[in-house]
Amino acid sequence: MPSFLTTHSALTCGALTITFLNFSYLPNASLGSSTMESGAIALAFLPLVLTFIIRYYFMLFYRAVMVRLSREEMAFQYFLIHANPGDPERILETFDLWCSKVEFISNISPKKSSGLLGKGSVELADNILFPGAPNFLRHVRKSGLYEWKLHRATLEYSKGIRDGMAELVYLGIKTAAPRNFTSCRDMWWVFVLLLSLASRALSLEMLNMCMDAKHHKKEPGAEGQLYRQCAPWRDNACCTANTSTEAHDDNSYLYNFNWNHCGIMTPKCKKHFTQDTCFYECSPHLGPWIQQVDQSWRKERILHVPLCQEDCHSWWDDCKDDFTCKQDWHYGWDWTTGRNRCPAEAMCRKWTDVFPTAQIMCEKIWSDSYSYTSLSKSSGRCMQLWFTGKNPNEKVAEYYLNHAPWQRAAPATLLLLATMSLSVVLL
Image (tube, rainbow, N blue to C red; front, top):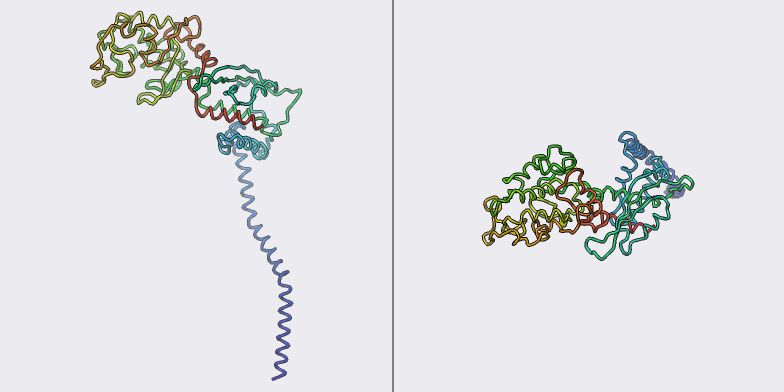
């Protein structure tokens, strides 16, 4: 028994020693096993990583070669997705990220991606004189890259605050002193102006647009069959031939309006209302005076369109022997029969009693749609209700767009242009 125990003890001690020795070497054995397992895991994920890389470059190939999206479109889409509206710092970071991570990876490089504007391109910059805005024009003058023209105005909602719009013509990068576009911040104005041009409130659109109303077309265009008094607009009109015909009808379905609500309207007076209807329905140059409204039959109207003195006075003179019961023909009629009738409390009176002057008639009859002016047609500063030959109102609209306070401002455009101004400060 003692020998067995000794052996057993020896074995036990040996086992302990072996176990200890084995234990002492366990860490190295485990490390080798762990290294092998890590390598196996890495190899297992390698196909997935390669798949992502291949997919990424395939998307670049697909967009650049098969779909052939332009750099401008890709940059614009990337900007809309990653930049936060109203956050200038994030906008600048997005520009830099585009240059360093996107354009560069696609083998275009930041330097090549600088050619987004061609020589002679025209850009508009708004809110450049707003108090507290950065010295945008100083940058334009020093860069030597633009021809520029300043159009001064005031803010729509506060006439006492000066503001302005700059019209820029890009001259191209001078070959004698090439610039190295190492950062997209050198191109901040390119992206901002491109985005500005893409907005609905693009000012130049106001020179050729149709209002969103009951019978207007979506876009102006030629209408060769316009009827009689509407014919002057046939080269570029917002009305259809059918609308022009209905404008001459006493029982027109356009608005079911009864001109003969106080007896038969005289032909010479009716002619002016027909011309007025043609002007409203057909003119594509009312953009500077279009305002949004919340009405069941239209979403936009005109407000304070400056009429030429001759048109206003001839209209009033030709209607002064007629009768009416209301000064404002937009509101307050009795429509119970489906057509307008004088309200019960309104009496038919002579035209000159309801409208003592031509100014009162022109401004009140359609709720300030028109403004009376002392300007003549030859001035080029007033809108003509009717004309022969080339439409003179396009130049008038252009004048008021460039020199008069803007009559409407798209909130999105104001936000964008404010962002542009802040971007200059942060550069």
